[in-house]
Length: 455
Image (cartoon, rainbow, N blue to C red):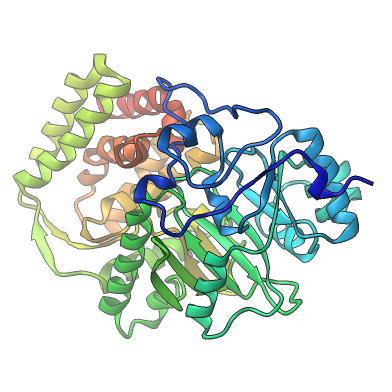
């Protein structure tokens, strides 16, 4: 029998005194950079390293939330073999999937409730056929492992749990989830304690400290909006649960929350409930009305020019001129100024027995206009590869109807289409330097907006 300790793997860990740049990785690099590949096909290291070492190693920085002074196997055959052994012997070992450098799911195979909860929560809409129907989630996670990490639980997470809950976790077992596995994207560490089949606490962190300000800002903005909302229970109940702890631990900014019972219930379409809540949220966070101004024009036009210059430079002048013309007609119109979610679409909205929860406030603003959230409800499904076709025309009609229902000039719908599309497509690159989801089809998305705008 092959023991995990006998596999070819290097010791890994995290030095609490490492400098800011000690944990750095620019995953899923822009097209003009080389792809990340491990220097050694068998192993890679997770210990603090220079930016160059991190880029060359392919080491997933988010593993600092799982293991302390552990080992990482990067050869897939060895990883699968070790994963199956860990599954059989109930050893603490973490299967990385779908990519060893950018894992979205990291499951403790020695604790079957962890992979079961991950699969049931985040893959519940995938059809259960073939091996997925025959195998348990733990065995499935072992067979599809792209890498395997072993070691004791992360001291960083254990300390965060104790600060949030007031006591250390009993017999902790961990699992990780990230939407992309990239180091500049938020990762959740799910803490199973005392033999529970579901996690009781979630610890959130952005692995690359260069971008930790995004989680800090998200947390602070949500709490300020919660305070502004005050006694509006319907609106406040849809906000994320208040943090048990939010602050720096060992140089990382972490947020500790109780497990939200709505977790995994997103993506179901209920347009009426979602837009009803959005109207109530914008009203509850309103700081009053202001008139649309030349400064508003310039802000929107800058977004349009930047986006079209990147993906459709041949049309930049015509599109910017048309948007400028449309906005000029609206100068002086009264408009509510309110809180902004920034990514308001069904993938971030959970519905359960008439109640609603809105997640992922990383793009939130304390004050802005209502247009982007209304448009985002239409643009968000682009990420589900829904066809463009006549969809954008229908979306424009729905945005007009929504504005009319709010007694806002419906001409704002067409005037804000190009700014909303440009911001959606390129906002991730503007913040992180790496392309986001919407950028994969930037040219076709902007061209579709052009056809509606210029016809």
